[in-house]
Length: 141
Image (cartoon, rainbow, N blue to C red):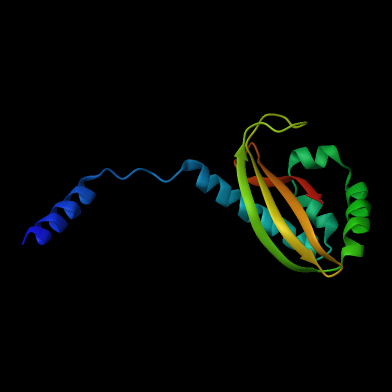
């Protein structure tokens, strides 16, 4: 009887505990991840011009479309197709070195390409003025 009373009391206390909204950054991080995955699909498919078009304002003001297409093609071609991409970390930030203040999510992947077994990709979506998330930076190490 005592055990049943303890379980009922615990259940009542749990039900009475106020529920708090999920971490507001978690939703923002999810939105940024979705934008990054969509953008990476274009890049992985060799649609470099379209990836530039779909990138954020900060990205497009930092590199001309033809420069992006030439640079990313010369970087990605020797690596071959993506064989595996695993999420390693996400970090919400409002300031980043060399970038204007804003809302960013720094996303890091461990990636395996056909011709490079271990690479680190960093994709940084930025929240645009209209509230959408668009890629503002992309790096491979």
